[in-house]
Image (cartoon, rainbow, N blue to C red; front, side, top):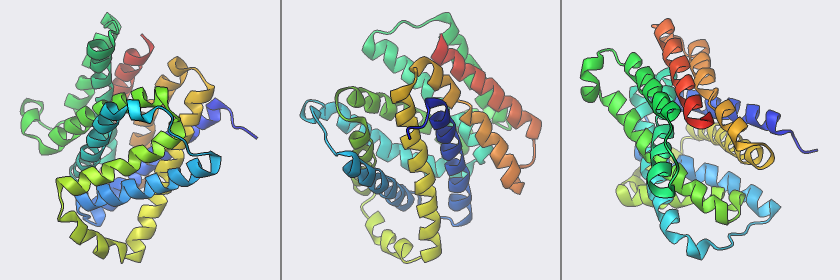
Length: 287
């Protein structure tokens, strides 16, 4: 029985929000090398998605005509996941979701500059709202550019905005599920090329059974969330699902406050930042 797009969207939001919480706990508590983490995590999610793609029917039609956006997506995702890990080592999960939401601004700008889309006043207001949410989270807004966690978070937004734009373009012209699997596996090569000595640290991590079991659970939640998102987009209207998925900003903040005791401070500021950021992203998507 096929699930409705409403249920799939809810699964996507919950799965990806839980994955952020688990990543924060894992990266902050176990002090994993961010390069090794990015390589192993992406390989595990890619393997899970590839297994599903093979069962359904793996195929990549027209992929030979899409090599440039495939390369852009792979490089941006590879570097993006490294920065993603570095950010979660520096900032709390409740703040990360707000920083990560800045990727929507870059996607909007790419749409305007590369695909000839029209920028509206509502979208401009949405961008201001998102950055207002970011500034609200920084302890000293005047020193935003010297806050390493904030800079990592903003860099993650740029890289994921680039990656998702290229990924979506490729997904228009080939099989979405098969491409989703490959789009997680190719960046592993990028990570290893960016830091070759990462290969020496991976075996030690693979031997840690407790850590690997945590990574497997994390990969499962991320993979389920990603798959649910893909199928939701296939069944429902993009203009409806996209803003609904942004509730993940609020869900992540609430889950972080519920399950990570160390994050239970400045609660009003965090919730306000999440709500302001959510409003900004919705303005970008529905206008």
